[in-house]
Every structure is written in structure tokens, then in C-alpha cells.
Length: 165
Image: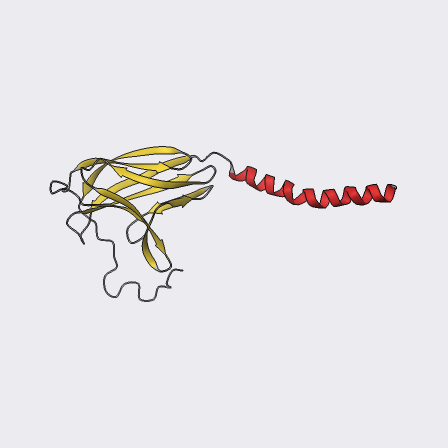
């Protein structure tokens, strides 16, 4: 009889260990995100007369989060999140922000695009952009459009660089 009780106990432990491990892992990901926005700036696009680009560093010192929406006070404008993938720049509905990570929205990479700018949206135009996070709520940036700085490499530069994955 003691052998039967021992076998049942061992069987229950074998079944319980994965559940305990899953709970521990899930407990770690439930940490509250700690989002800060740094180095935000906005530039007018050189490719389209009615388009602007927003760059910002999103620092997260806590649990995971995601940008699920972007809004702006620019009248009539449409905002979108673009992410760099292996196949190039693609529009996305959300941008994951991993726990204890930094995501940099920068030229020639992931960015926020503001389309359908009004004719008066020139250098010096003031507006706000609000990033809506799934867990952290809203963060609003006060920005001023500037003329675009040169970002892409000129001919001959970067010829010996290894392509990114």
C-alpha cells in the first residue's frame, strides 16, 4: 500500500512541476511596464510633400507592453506605425515592446508616419503625437516639424557593410 501511495505522489509531482514552472514564467511577464519616451523629434519627409516622420526612443524598464495606436492633433492627418522587417518596411497595427528593452524609432528603420499633412504643416509647425500602449496607457509628445536631415548613405558609402538580418 505504501508503494501505491508513493507512486501516486510521484505522478502528481510530475504533473505539477510543469504547472509550477508555467506559473513562475507567467508571473515574471506580469510585471508592470515602466515606459519612458526619449529623444523625440519630427521631420518633414523629402519623399512626399504631405508626410511627416516621428522618431523616438521607447525605453521599458519593466514588463512587456506594446504600442497599439498612435494619434496626432494635426487636423485631417492619418498616423501609422511602420516596422522594419527582414523583407523591408511594413505597416503594422501594434509594435511590441519587450520587457527590459529599448526600441528606437529612427530614420531608415521603424518609425511613425503622419500622412495627409495640411498645407500649413511646414518647418516650425507645432503639434502633438500620442502613443497608446496596451498596458501603460497614453504618452503624449509635444513636437515641432523640422526639415529632414540627411539620413541615407551617399554613393560609395557602406559598400563593405554586412547586411542586417
